[in-house]
Image 1 (cartoon, one colour):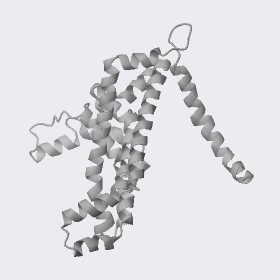
Image 2 (image 1 turned 90 degrees about the vertical axis):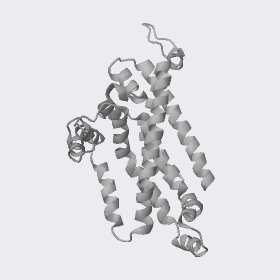
Image 3 (image 1 turned 135 degrees about the vertical axis):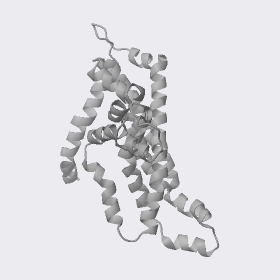
Image 4 (image 1 turned 45 degrees about the horizontal axis):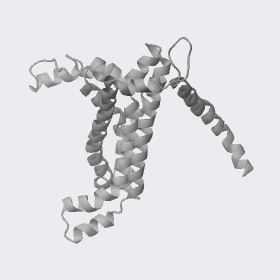
Length: 273
């Protein structure tokens, strides 16, 4: 037992020193006023919940995260199913192609979408040449749509991999038994495949929805003013306005949202098990 504690102590020290302690420091600052003589107060939290702007931005962040998560599920599930149950060769190559984006910086990927989605860019010129748009001005860049597209691209691999792992564990004999008993493909999917793969969907939703709540790079670069979310407000408070106390309060409100969402999805995951 002592050896185990000794082996775990370096990791526990790093976790405590660089994760837990900074959180408590931020929690301390979130209860301080911005006056010349700092004092403990709930003013920062009251300001957040009393102003409609921040509540509206919070709902916008949640809605955007839900949209990104749903789009990832719709795109990832068919791809994961084909990889797990249809094709027999080339799975490792496809997985490698899915993982390759992880090797590049998230900032680089955001700027690549900036070049791709801009008016007169590669996508606009292509759509114009095939006759889908009349001009090369698409009007997507610096909107919430551009931020959603980039977030889907960035977090999509998490959803594919988790669903693929769930479908890969699914015994093919169960599907064959359903077919032999006369079940139609849609009924087999609804009553056999989907319920058994639901844990993978929920796990993927956690891995996509939670990071989306705190994202600020993609909304800042691709969304502009229209792409403002709660993450960009926190960034502004710390690096532009230097309102560290209020920024800390917003950060802890966001942390509470993350913990609540993770708790809710974890309950769903435990029910499936």
